[in-house]
Image (cartoon, rainbow, N blue to C red; front, top):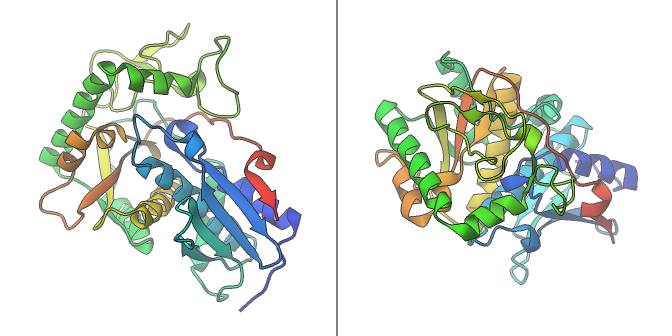
Length: 329
C-alpha cells in the first residue's frame, strides 16, 4: 500500500487529465472537491450542465463524469499513484458520484498508465472514414478493454448495423421536429456568432466536420441549422463500423461504469491508430433506445454507439480551466 499526500500540484495535474474526457456536447458536467484532511478527491455531477430535453434521466451526464473519472485514474497511475474508487458513496447526495483515494495496492491495474499518451490525442472525429475494415484482433482488444470496466462491447453484424443506422436516421427526424431539442443543441454549439456561450465549452464550428454530400452522415450534424461559412461537403463511408457499449442493468452505477469503459475503449482505439466518434442520437429517445440492442446479446442496455475506423483525427474541443472545476476543502 502507498500513501500520497494530496498536494495542490498533484491534484491539479490529475484534474488536468480528468477534464480531457468526452461529454455530451462538451458540456463538461463535472466538479471535483479535494478533501486534503482525509485524502479523498470527490467527483460530483453538475446538473446545471445537463440536457433536460436530450438527457432527462442524466444517463449521458453520468457517462461523461465516468469518463472523467477514468481519465483521472489513468493520470494517477501514470504518475506512479494507485487510485481506489468508490462509486456513489453518499446515499443522501445523488450528485456525489465517486470518491478516489490514492492509497491502493501498488499493482492495481498498472496497465492504465500506458493509456496516458492518448488522453491529449483522443478527439471525436466527425470526418469521413475510409472503407478499410478494423481487424478482428483490434476489435477483440477493445472488447477486452470494456470488460476490464465491467461492461460489454458488442460489434454488430451487418443486419444489426443496418438497424442501428436506421435508428440514427430516424432520430435525426425526431430532432428536426423538436424545437426544444434543437434549441438545446444550439446552446452548446459555437459558430462565432455574438451572444453565444463561453469559448471554454461546447462544440466549436471547427469540430463540426463536413456536411454530408449525398447520403445521411453517421455523425450528428451540429451545423445543420446553423450555417458555417466555408464549410465543405463530403461523402461519408457507405457502411460505418460501429460498436455498442452496454451493461446488463440500467442504474446510475452502471452508467458510471459505462462512462469509464467508454473512455478506456476510446483511448485504446486511439493507441491502435483508429479514429472514433460517439453516436448517442438514437439512445436519446426512449422509443428508439431499446431497439438498438441485439436481442441475442446478454447486454440488456446500450449506453453508447461508438463509430470506429481509419480517417482524420478529430479537432480538439475547448476545456474549462481546472480552477473552474476543482476546489480544495
